[in-house]
Length: 408
Image 1: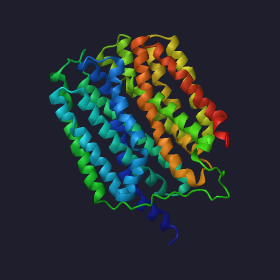
Image 2: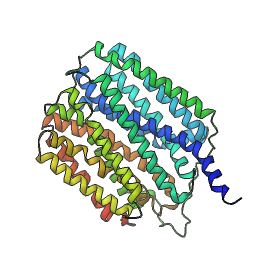
Image 3: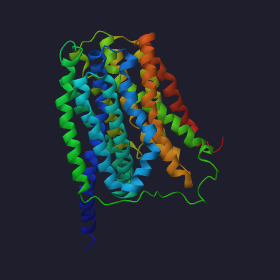
Image 4: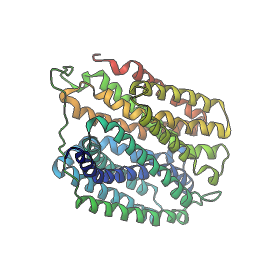
């Protein structure tokens, strides 16, 4: 009897994990297509770089606004039904692209992106616990890495599909004619999201409790407020910096290449280089962490790698500069999974609110690209990347000493 138990247990986890893997694929697809939309809308609406980067702002600011409310939604719906709700909200957002294209309305496109982000926030809040629960706790980090690989593979595929559809040819014609290109793919995406919502609603996914296993009071650092935990507050800032850097490294690289003289056909797949770097980083993490290097060491490496490549991007020209930005992806991969456990360490009863604050740190992906766009317009496309130096510098500070602080 004993030899057959593990395989039976593996089979029982496999189906639900494949469903969650499909959701992480969707996360990556709708998130990373923003890089193509930024370049496409910039030309279609004759926008400034700052204006086109509102795509990232509208999408990622929803994480900040919905981080805490989404947990309240899930208390009423449950996690499984909550995932269906999240997918349906995303479907409403993708469907809005159709009237937005017909009305030639950039603000309406931004509304659609905002709704996609809201649905995605609910979906991620609901689906992430499954990755930890569906299988042995000691292998949870490995499952998270595999979900990251599904996420980045989807991002790469989205670049080839939407880059080919929207950015093929030397230039994108401005106005209604070019905007009609988004109608069919976003109608298809709407249909996929609705079908997935129904499949999950009627699937055999087990319901999980939203309760987390907090540390016993005897093992937690005792503070009266969540803001009294420096490792958490600094961790939120580190994630704010990290998400901002990741979005800038992926979503602005197409426009940067075009500013350097590359045409649409040459630049439209530049974001895939960043995603390939992220993918390689996840694979390396699965192999090396923690057997060869610790999570903390990987975090330090990621920050130093980013500092070196930012400097290289500023000191080189042409494709070398573009490639320096893209290769940041490799070092960025271990930062997200490393910051979370360090930031939530010894929070005890404040673990849940700490998690919500970390999700709010994703607002770095909304605000920092706007600053980058402003610097691109007002200073220069290359010098704008100098803002990454203090961001990577803060991540390095957190990796070296910030995470150790238990009191201010």
